[in-house]
Image 1 (cartoon, rainbow, N blue to C red):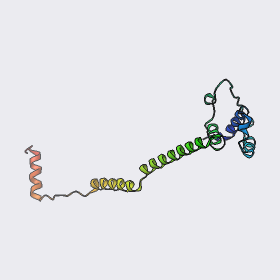
Image 2: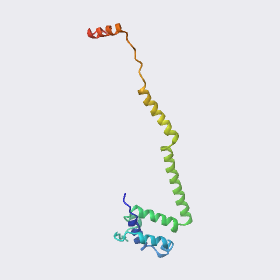
Image 3: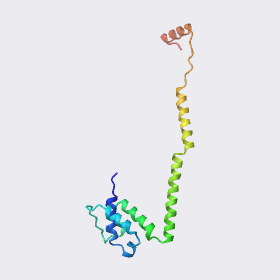
Image 4: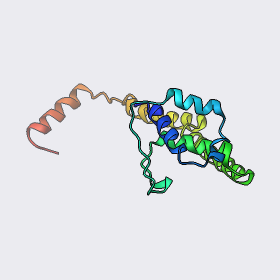
Length: 147
């Protein structure tokens, strides 16, 4: 998987040039300096001012960075509360899916069933021993096609 964070930092810096200065000043300077220091200086990204932010062709990493910036620095307390509640709900759903998929109790049940199924086919069969004269009679019946 390709590491696109350097390109995403470049996209963030370019987009922030079109964001009001009041909003940009809410972002810590150390974060902005990190973006500038780690961005891919050769990556060419141009913001299309005729398109809305949602319509821009951005990397997923760029979207994630802006989501964090919005949550941490630009959101109202109500928005921040709603975002954190949504993130917590999503985490719980992921944990629930993991619990269902990797439930230790169910793993042992299914394994026990698999072991039982395998054992059924591997059980020894009861072998009936025919007496010598019964073998001869069976053989003669086969030769003469007698049931």
